[in-house]
Structures are given as C-alpha cells and as structure tokens.
Amino acid sequence: MAERERSIHEMLKDAPSLNDSCGPVHTGTEGGSMVIGSASSHSIAGGAGIMGVGGGPFIPPNSLPLRNHSAPTTPMSPISPSPSGNGILSPTDSGSLIRTSASKIDSIKNWSISTYKCTRQIMLEKLGKSQRTVDSELEAQIEQLRETQRKYLSILRLTRAFSSHFQHVVVTQHALADSFADLAQKNPELQKEFTCNSETQRNLTKNGELLLNALNFFISSVNTLCNKTIDDTLLTIRQYETARIEFDAYRMDLENAKPELTPSAAALEDTQRSYAQHKDQYEKLRSDVAIKMQFLDENRIKVMHKQLILLHNAIAAYFSGNAMALESTLKQFNIKLKSPNTSSGSWLEQ
Image 1 (cartoon, helix red, strand yellow):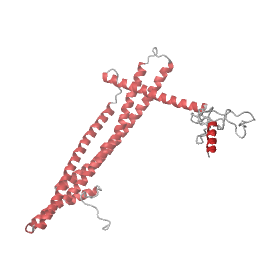
Image 2: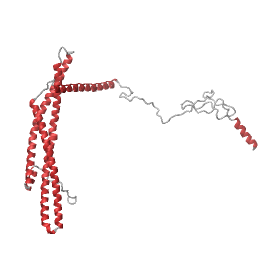
Image 3: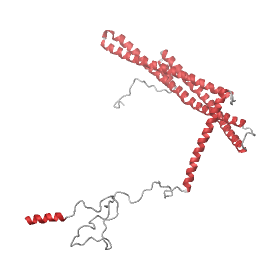
C-alpha cells in the first residue's frame, strides 16, 4: 500500500505543470486544428512525438477554431440592388433620376418666381404704383353675390334660432299635456277641465311638430344654397382673381422689358410667351365666372321662390290654427310628416 502511494506521488512530480503553455488561446480565428501537444511535451507511446501533415514536426496553432454556423456564407453588400442586378446604377437609371430631380427643381423655381411676382404686384397695387385690370360689370356682380351670401347666411342663422326656440316650446307643450292628462286621472272633480287642456296642448304639439318639419326643410335648403352652391361659384371667383393678379404681374414685366435693357431676344420672347399664357388663362376663368354666376342666379331665384312660399304658408297656417292647411302645405312640398317626439313601434307591432 505504501509502495503504491509512493508511485502515485512520483508520477505527479514527473507530470508537467498545468501553468506551462506554449500555445495560449488569443483569438477565435479559424486555421489550425485543436492543440494536442507541443514540441516540449512528453512523448507518448514510447517517446514517439506527434507528427504534422506531410511527416514534419507538428506545430501547434495559437488559437482555437471558432466557426459561427448561424452566420450567412455569402457576403452582404451595402449597396441596394439596382434594376441591373449588380448593385450599381445603370446609365438609364441614373438618367431618369437626374431628370426627375431636375423637373422638381424647375417646378420649385417656377413657383418661387410666380409667387414673388404676384406678391410684388399686390404690394404695388396697394401702394398705387401699378394699374390693375378692371372689369367693372363683372366685379359689381361678384360684390353683389358676396353681399347676397352674407344676407342669406344671416337669414339662415335667425331661422335656426327660431327653430331651436320653437322646438323648446313644442317640448314644453308636450310635457304640459302629459301633466294635464295625469291630473285628470287623479282629480275626478276637475277631470273635464284637465282633459280639455290636455287635448288642446296635444293638438298644439302636433301642429308645432309639423311646423318644425317645415322649418328644418327650409333651413336645409338655404344651407345647401349658401354653403355649397354659392361657395362653389366663389371658389371659381377666387381662382379668377388669382389669375388676374398673375396676368397683371406678367403684363407689367412685359411693359418694363425695354429692348435696350433686354439682355437677349430669347429673354424677351420668353416674357411675351408667359404673358400670352397668363392672358389666356385669365380670359378663360373670366368667362367661366360669368357663366357660373348666370346659372347660379337662375338656380337661386328658383330655390328661394319655393322655400319662401313654403315658409309663409306653414307659419300662416300654424298661427291661424288651420291644421288642414298646414298638412296640405307639407304634402305640397313633399315633406315627410315625421314627429321628433314619436318613436317607431317595436318589431312585433310591425
């Protein structure tokens, strides 16, 4: 037992130190195989050293092989693929990109020049240093249209207020009719009087709801006329006024372009071409405005004639207590007799 322990200790003494290493791990690059031994290692199997490839002495690598199996095997190109497929823009693609950029730059340049000229023209007109093109007849019609819209909007606002107040009256009459009916059931000695007042308030509520339908129809029609039909014509008028300013700006440029001050004939020709183009646009929009205002005037007269007759007949029939005339007026104008306080029946009743 003692001899066996001595042999173990002797073997441990003869073994190499664990701190001895001639090939430490520095990096994870690929290259050689794993270190099995070194030139200074003890021989194995009778002192025979490990031989390298080709019969020469084995040289240990300085790193361990580390392969990232999840990484892609093909290199990634930082350039996005082009239509040609090689990651480089072809001459055709480069030409189209240049043309697109040039067209955007030209549009911005033209917009900047036009904006500058129009702003300058507006300032000169306000200062009285430039003459503006005036169409007295058309501008008088435009001003009259704007004044008409303001007055119609005032009528629309007042009619809405009247409808809102009158709706509160109808709701109050309906609640009052219910209270009279309830008191008629609870007071037998005054049942006749309460019932009479309840029926009167119910009739007033019914006729008031019919008048509310007529008022809502009037409000809807006038609102469409003011905020849609007239606004559409005013939009064309604003385009016409913008075209007039542009036309005057380019007309002033042409008047100020003296032959002795013009650097070249091409610049003068370009000024004349711009002037002719804006003149055509101005005349076209002026014609459009005149036609639209003519049709608008005819449509306005027809709509307001119908709506004013409706409003007059409905209000006169209601306040005179003529329920039959009120109902016939609503039927004449194809207005649905829909009560705001009545609810539709259940699906079982239908």
